[in-house]
Amino acid sequence: MQSLSLLSTLLLALLPSSLSSELDDVWRSYLSDPPQKAVSLTASLQARADTLADSLSSKGWEIDLTNIDVVCSGGGNYDAFYAGVQMMISRLGGRVGISRYAGVSAGGMFPFEVRGLEIVLRR
Image (tube, rainbow, N blue to C red; front, side, top):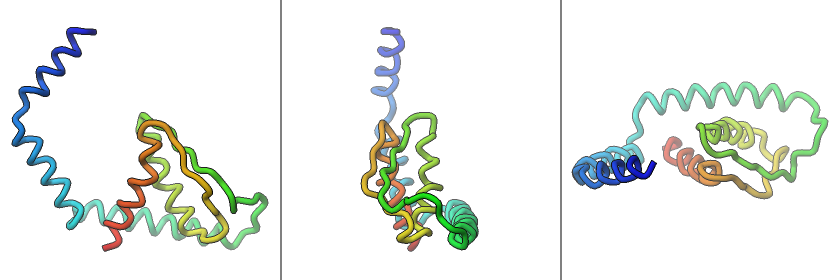
């Protein structure tokens, strides 16, 4: 295990800094001009969320969701499930009220990253 750690450290040290810089430039460019495929997929997911939220809004609520905590798991991209949850929460207006966000690992960061992504994709 120690030799694997040493090998990965050496490989990272040998990576040209220009590669890292190029990758950073690509991601930065997405902030001002997201890839069209990402914009299209987002629009499709948003339309599905709109349809689902409309159908839920026409039904009666049996539980009080006006004061909830949102806790996101980390690892295995399960935290990405939160993207769909946030789409629904934002469409249900005052019927769902979030008091706090919590999470571990990526799940602790994801709610804040999604908010930033929503801002970028609304441009």
